[in-house]
Every structure is written in C-alpha cells, then in structure tokens.
Amino acid sequence: MGLEGRLPWEGNRAAEYKADVARFFEMTKGHVLAAGPKTIGSVPEFARADRELLVLRSSMVPERTLQGFPGRVVFIGGGPPIWDAYARFVSRWDITRLPYDGPADRWFDPNWLIQPERAHDVTA
Image 1: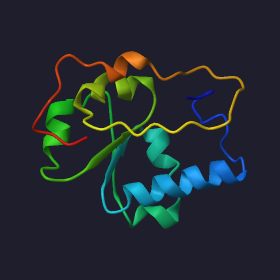
Image 2: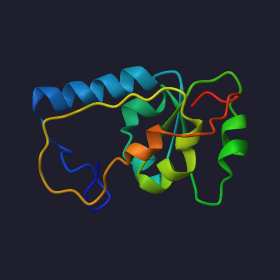
Image 3: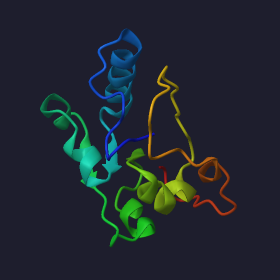
Image 4: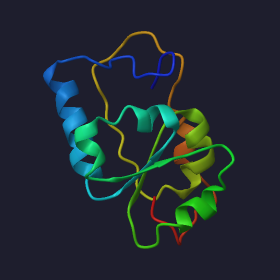
C-alpha cells in the first residue's frame, strides 16, 4: 500500500496504472475526498476543482468530521493511521489490485474490512 510515504508505483506510466488513476479521479469527481496531508497534497491541480478536498488530522474526531457532510459521498484516502480511525465508517470499499510486487513498508490490514460496529448515519 505504500513505501516511504508514497505509492511505490507512483509515476508508472503503464496502461493499468494510468487507468487506475483516471478511474479514481472519475469516481471521486463531485464528491468529498478526505485524506491525510500527503494524499491531499498529491492531488494534481486539474483535479482540485472537481471535488471537495479535506485534510484529515489526528486531532479530528471522525464522527464529527463526517457529520459535516450530510447527504454527501465521502471518500477516505490515506495510510494506515487514517484507516485505523475511519475504517469503521466505511460502508462501501473500493479496492483495486495492480500488478506491483515490489518493496513496501505499509500494507492494507484486512481487519479494516471487519468492523463489528459500523456507523449508519454517515456515508464514507
């Protein structure tokens, strides 16, 4: 999922990587993208006008943060600290697989998919 704070395949120009990035920007268009500072900082200028961006901080209370967007679709992005805080609010996961088999220092924890208590009033 990451290497030294970045996507390890970042900059790969192969078709499947370009398609994944295009799909991400199409899917989040018109919605809220809430993520850590590095993820939000990596959103290119062309994509900033088409979605509302929110930088998530460790001091923010997830319930209150998400309640600020009633009726909106909120996409959550970032690394493990973000997922640790927000996974229980996710009502729909969209996980892509890419043909990367190289070094990484961050992984997706499958326990994030198994949340015994999910919030029902928030779309994430």
